[in-house]
Length: 190
Image (cartoon, rainbow, N blue to C red; front, side, top):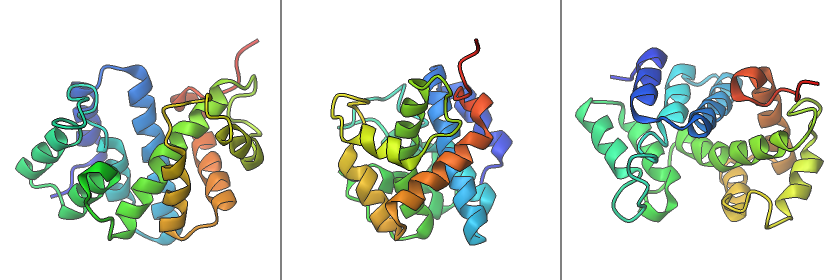
């Protein structure tokens, strides 16, 4: 059975202490929910999948033995939907799990890019307000900026999802702007 948004957030509060990781999870949840709404998919399932995808990253950061394996074990134990489990497994390319469902492809497309958009917003005095895809693309060309973001995955995600890259960036910016205060992406106060 799929967890409710409330149950998913309780897990985040239990497993994730880092404010920045929590904001990342909320950002991915935001993008997932927006795409589900756009396509008439299960909004709650998409949202909780985004919220939970990096649940174990802080406790088990070792990609050889930890993340996302520990979270996947927990989801299996709790009887979460296979689609959620497969999507979380699929976002970790090193596991080699194919992304077959639209939801799995969406998570992969939203994950790295939403984090990058947040990084871009954090260095702008106006935050995410008025951000254009052009400025995000310009920052993507600077390898030193948000160096931890895998640029190949950013572009591959949009391609796998079958969406135009510029439209994908604009769509995520718009979705995240709606929750800018919660995501910490509002303009810097004077």
